[in-house]
Image (cartoon, rainbow, N blue to C red; front, side):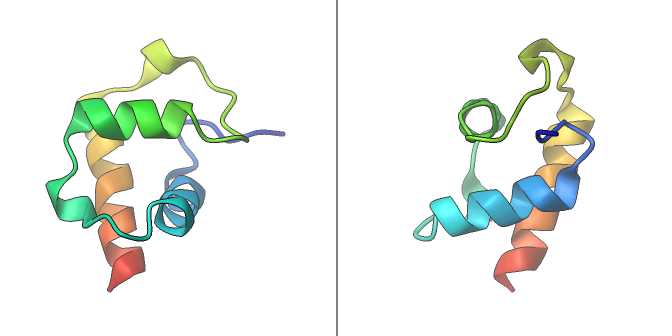
Length: 66
């Protein structure tokens, strides 16, 4: 089963492994949304994301890089 918007930590881990040179604190939500939708195992509906979901993923990503 692929990644869904609710898989916050798993998405953050994937992003941290792919975008090693990016400081997630400064990523725009539009870019974050596109990067998540482009993940190889992401299978959820892109239209189901919300600002709160994107913020949660971004915060988890920040925690992963610390």
